[in-house]
Length: 556
Image (cartoon, rainbow, N blue to C red; front, side, top):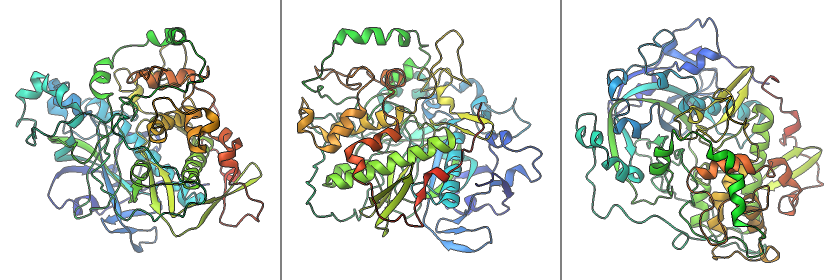
């Protein structure tokens, strides 16, 4: 097991990386730490968690013995306030507090969201730490590495408003505060283009099992496929191949795509009404945000329009640099069934491990929240429930990222993103502590949610017909995605037979949480697409022994 701890970091490496002088204030402390430690004996401004490595500069990390190691690092700039709310004036009455960083004693001075231990940025940061500890203490190579964080005020926080520009231009506050609280890049007339639909989104070509192994992607355009609602990421100076993208608190990648359900699906479209009765009672606090932000997330290189927000609070999170997203692979590569199976089963085992160790749900898992890192390691061996799975990597290790909507447990605490709070982007998806509404039915975090949500983002990659083929004619990846997109009643959660979205925008998330319970990660191993990786060979010593991973939380 690993032990949670902290240390004092005296050198401010984040300011050393601030070549442009964009950081005004900085500190190590964030409010979540106050729930982890009592009687802290170091300066809170210099506090750091006890991760295996900490960042020294953009090209180096330092281990616990002060040895310097060459390592490429990615800095994720995670806003502590909703940038769209800021731009439309929702913080106007408290604008003087925007640049006040949190501390143990300034709760009345600091904005409530910035001081909230469940701020999505703090939730994301802490789970990156937990993931890194799993990587180094349990050798889970599918876990992302983490090198520390700082809470800062940025002189100008760069934020992509492309998807929200029409909504923003309807706001008087947005228009009149330009060059006062922010400034914009010039909007080119050809910037705004129609969103991707299934008719123009590439469909992956699945090769047969005799296909030759494809070369690994050499280059990846980090500016492509960026989600831009809550987690904005900025590239390291001079790095053109860093890959990390942001976690948009919005709906499915394929929300605006059109595709019909399988022709052999037996259903009554009117049956949806019964399933939605409970959902119709949900608070509408975030309906306005749903309308403006829960549109198609797909972006290409041209879909960029930046606002620069003045004196804005941000958490800078230092993470390992990866080489591409699952989304980029599906768009740019021709993958055979085994390569797709390798990616899927690595994701499945990662979810199994996170659920076992931390009672974890990601709650926004899609193809841009799965990264890969190139590797020379030929196989990953997993031992689970007495069975040995030998998974070929095809040169890629897959890792899940962006935990800002996460709900998980550690020790005696439950950490739940404030995205689920009243007014939050995910309010109404669940009804549980710490945001439990006693007047409504309890809805606990759902361990089947993540694979269903991932399946929704994969659907238009694997099906290019208006009507998918009969199941007997589907490839194994198609069968898998098709299954993940079905609810407890056998209905496609994403589309009706007509091709119309069954549950537009954030409604999809609410209905997955209520009506999808048959896609637990461990149950996927029973299907032939994943049992093909079972091996009778001797289990290597460097295998991932999932049964040996402890539960890091206390039973309630």
